[in-house]
View: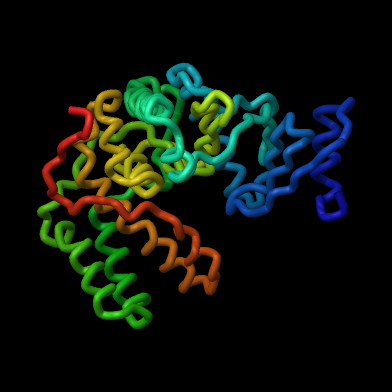
Length: 302
């Protein structure tokens, strides 16, 4: 416990006066929160900055709505004050692509159906419910102007570090946005905004998804953002299998194909701008199996 601030431990004791610190995991990797997992029983999150307090407050609003519409377990805040929340620990390991591919066909089908149903339920929460709860835009929300600005910054900042074939790939990725060929219009829905494999918990005993965590970036945005993350997580052959439980897939797939192509660029750009190698390396391990924008969509289960 030597490296855990005493103020954090004092706060936990104040909320849970009878608790014993038998096992503590102190996680400082996140950009928004420091996290302490107590006895594999409670998760305690502390906002690192003042703006992180606003993130926690907004996440509380989102979770209050989501828990009424989602079948999968999600965090339920037990205690909330400015800059500090606690909730029961959700057990599971990250649902990596390798983990999914090693499952039997029956188990794969079950897990993919769970993932698709989760997205369908999340993206179908009525707009009036979200408005009434005060849910605002996700930090992952992007406009055409945002994408064009990203392209400009990538050219100015990254191109000098890239080989010619990499520059060509980037030019080809952004060409449909520059020309206007790619339709970027959408109806805002509630998105998770950051559903990486480590936010999808998998139970190896039941061979099923055991929970979805970290809604800190959740808010109103383009559903293509969430599907793009799944393309990066698992590849298009797997994502296409979501279509039967996520019928809007064909409407978002082209925007998702573009979006997933920008993920490494966004993190690499930040890594160079802030001289932080860890940011540049954040998306090593993405699935590479993604079709070109405009490719005829033909789900494997149709």
